[in-house]
Amino acid sequence: MPKSVKELKELIAEKSARVTAIAQIANAEKREFTAEEVAEIDSIQGAGDKPGEIDALNDQLVRQEKIETQTRKILTNRGVQHTSEGPANIRVKPIAGKLKSFKGPDAERDAWVSGHYFAATLYNSDASRQWLNDHGYSIRNAHSTSDNSKGGFLVPQETAATIIRLVEEFGVFRQNVGTVFPVSSGSLQVPKRAGGFVVRHPGENEAIIESDAQFSMVELTPHKAAILTRLSSELNEDSLPLLADFLTREFAFAFAVDEDQAGFRGNGSLASNRIVGLETALTGLAVSQAGGSRNTFEALTLADFHNAMARLKQYPGIQPKWYIHSVGYYAAMERLMAAGGGNAIADLSLGGNGAFMGYPVVFTQTLPSSLATSAAVKYAYFGDLSLACAMGDARAIEISSSDQRYFENDQLAIRATQRYDIQVHDRGSASESSAVICLQFA
Image 1 (cartoon, rainbow, N blue to C red):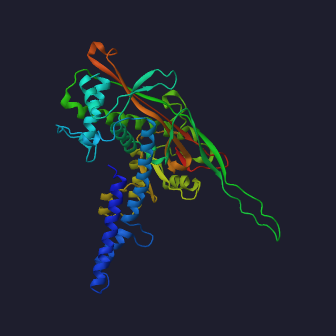
Image 2: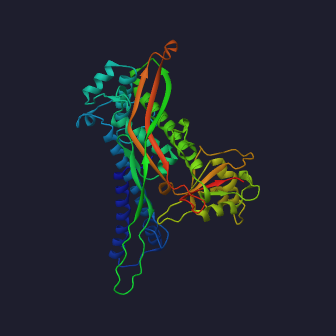
Image 3: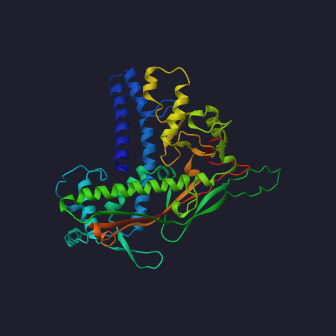
């Protein structure tokens, strides 16, 4: 589980304090650093071009600050209401089971709040509705964006924050697309860099011709994504936290997979939430095809990956990664590294360590995985999603139920919905590549 901003800052402070303590001891004893002390300082602070533990923690801190800021914006837009002192004073019974979704010091409290929320809204439990009211929570209906009729119920902050965090953990596209823009209603236009300043060379006494940074706009119009499932109509109060733990995890995983499928492989259809993903959007020099007749993972050579790397548009500060199915990684990338020669048993036991050709590898299980001949199939991507794509998130996660659809089975129909959009704005052309390169079999 990712550490919070507070935890990361505390870790950074601890590491810095350790370096200070080592220096103070050496100064007090009027001596040079020992080899062990130098190694520890270099490990913490870094040495030369090699980053240290503090650098890694600072990178995590920047990312986590963005996540927490985005979470606060989304939750604010969702209008969740509770009293300021209610949640802090909740006393709950121990949970008979292990939680997987809810984390941190308030995990059991959050699980009970979410469990009572599900019982009140899905099972229409008066006891749970009263429990929530007694602790300062207001159960509110959401409204449809089309006819303003009542929809599902907005989830409380504890439940929404857990689902958002889990979607962030499970979803490859959301993790790597950079800022996820909150779209309060309708659509949102976000700027995209189209060109930079132009350097002029004026003659003596000549005016300098003005130049402006060039921007174009990307429009994000979130559409609904929905989950429909069923649960037993029987409810045991002691199982409420585990019910909440199960539902939040399953909702988050399903939404994350849906976003990855749309972002990487969307073709603009309803099944892709009307999203045109990388597979369809990238064109021209943004597509790197394998040479010869190499149309399987087991036939790919290093040259096929080198060619993709050479096509990448070199934006300032670009941080490219490989995106590939785990089957493709082991059948192609890991195979090529193992065949490179010079490997000892210890090297082979470590495997590729999640990197290839000096860049991180991210497993994306929505990408092609077949080991059979796959002519012209787009099997992997190399680049920086944050520079080629934009993502927008809108309105609350809504959850509602019906006891009519599966009445004969004594089950409840459960529906969860969210709204999001993804736009690939740096698509490449016959004369220009992109910040993300698509790798395609011959």
